[in-house]
Image (cartoon, rainbow over all chains, first blue to last red; front, top):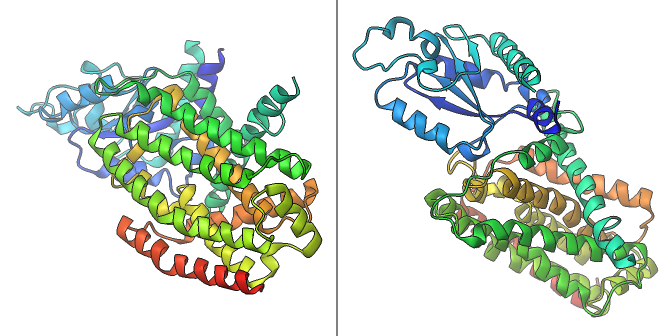
Length: 141
Length: 303
């Protein structure tokens, strides 16, 4: 496994994109950084700028206003950039599936690497999702 | 050969980068412990840098050539400071005429590099960050230079680092006199602002202007900026040790003093909220400059 990917698994900087979420997932994401769960011990940080990001953490149900911005943000991120779908809205749009203003689940818009289900997902579920992500990078080579 | 070794390996690039990244780790770890967290492992900052080297570098369309050049300017000047300081601490006769002035000039360049890089990236938030950085430089340079002048007066008007060190070896460290202690306090505040640490991380405020001056940087240039920050975290405390606590400079004492200063910085960082830029300017041009002037007068009186 080459050094670049190995370093990537040890220090994932996350940029959080909210594509029309109800704020529950967003609060749970911040929970991951609190003393109880402390994701910084695995080198995971939330960053303020897309240019520093290694992973986009997308929450919300993909409404018409948010999707063009989401695509733009994905293009602005330096590659290799991973995409994580967080919460049931981003995965399958939950109860907004038949809404006129929703454009489809996240994996119909961007290539998704890991799905973290839940409404909202618990911090434990997010940590397990990150473990899946790291394993996926390791197997990808 | 000897010169290349100095610049690239021992007091220079490799040594400074390793020690700086370790110091940056100590900063993160102590911060985590203060917040009752576990904190990252010791190799975290090295991994961050290696990862950034492997990432794509995105160039904004509005960026100009200085966008890519300015990170190296900052890193090079910081490394030069590290080499001059390191050589002086090993043999106090290794310096040259007026090297203290050169150090003062070189230590401003990382901030200037940040300003040039941010303002040539074409991002509005970066230009806000750059303007804040300019104001911060204007506000902390005055008391910092006054504090250094107090040290110069205490060592009989010598502006050579080696002579300041040998003077302290003869008459005791500067910090144990009234003027030296006041000047040391002033220098600690200025160092906090120079390092961009918390009460003064106005230019890089993550919550209000994303990453401020760093917002458009990615990949290699961002890694170089992170390295510059880490190297400054090693060189600035070292400069303060040379200026104020230069009596016992065997490696063990040097390390102990370095860690003591580092912990003071980290504690200030973690117990203070971020100031607004106008509050920071008032702070530096008001009480801190006053303190520096008092220490200057005391130094002239010989106290």
